[in-house]
Length: 118
Image (cartoon, rainbow, N blue to C red; front, top):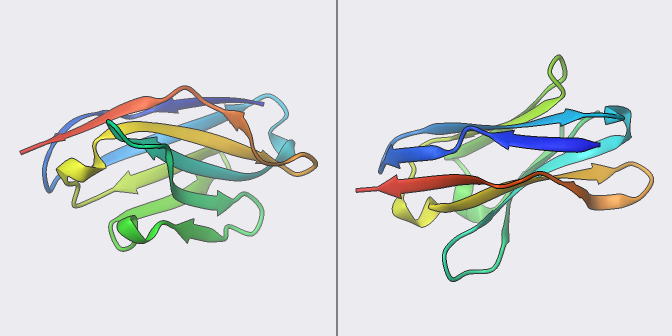
């Protein structure tokens, strides 16, 4: 399975961005898609996750009510709508895929930069 992240960019505080993580290859092996981020000077942290079959969602507390994740089955992509962005949301966002046989975070896409400015 290969993951391709896209959608990052520069946005003003209070604005919105939509990230997409497109999966290719043996996508039937994907059990979940997650987004993580790494802000300057910080460790990588969990942002959101969705299971590909049941559509169960999980969010980090700091994004609840602002970010929405969903699975586009027609495109085999996990999208992350990010609203009410602040400077603290700046970082490199990575998507990862869980394999139904091998467990969580087996597959990783390249990061996409999100920069929020005042």
